Amino acid sequence: MKAVILAAGKSTRTYPLTVTKPKPLLKVAGKTLLEYNLDQLTGLVDEVILIVNYKKDMIIDYFKDSYQGIKLTYVDQPEPLGTGHALLQAKDLIQERFILLMGDDLYSKQDIQNCIKHNYCVLAKEVDNPENFGVLELIGKKVKNIVEKPQMFFSNLANCALYVLDEKIFPFIENLRKSKRGEFEITDAIRELARKEDIFYVKATQWTPIGYPWDLFKFKDLLGIKGNAIGNNCKIDGVVENSIIMDNTLVRPGSVVKDSILGDNVTFQGTIHSNENATSIVKKIPRKAGKLGAVIGDDCTLEKVNITTGVKIWPGTKISGIDIKEDVE
Image (cartoon, rainbow, N blue to C red; front, side, top):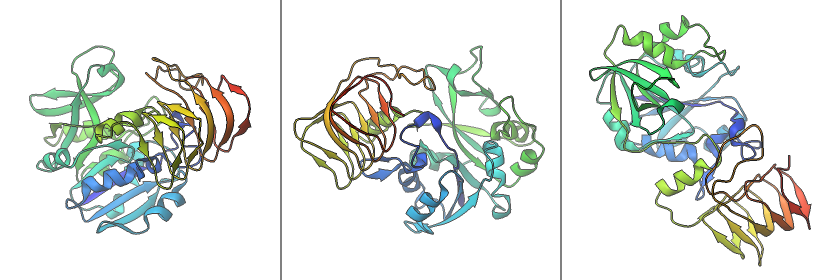
């Protein structure tokens, strides 16, 4: 069996972390998001087709041509024209049933195993805020449609964007019209497929979509990591609490880092404040982040700084001896 992982997107919502790398290469506890997903596929598939574009060479260089015995094949999506268009790039490589999943959402092997018991399947999870998700419209136990961010409540089953499909999906994709946001959506093709075939759903036991930097904390908790998630080759001499530190990062003596995310190759000396319900200052992400300190991109050197809660600092920043009260791009 094959799996197709969509990993082509630019992901501006996770800036500054994804200015320098694609989201699937973000690390928690020294391991990339894509590695965690590939781990769930071991023993279930023989080949994974990775749809790539944004900084694709970084993904190819990192994983090469195999992972834990799984063959890896890379296919470029030349334009960002949606999930349906992304899958269509793999058409010539698929003549059988396959698993389709996102490269930056985190799934469990048990849920995937339950899905592949069906010829066609959608993974779904009960949520408290269905208006923020694509929601399954059902007839009995079968999927009739997937409605994106419904204005009126009819179900709390959110689409986890993991599907079991086969080659019959491709003609429906080829006949798609662009959605309101100008993309070819896989969910529209699945709606058309549901008119011809029985598509079942499985309730997810765990699913973590990584839409914003602070969603990495949810994933850390899901992994059962209490306290800090420290990457490879880091040196931590200051006080660090409930933070995610990526690879090759130095926190100097006397520093205080709480509820924060520090990228690769960061040198930090100073204090990061953390408050409840911090709101990002960046207008691109006007969303409350819960308890949050700072998000610091790769290759930053920050010496003797005092950082206000919720601040984001773009990669390559070098600052010394000041209070940082707003985002640094």
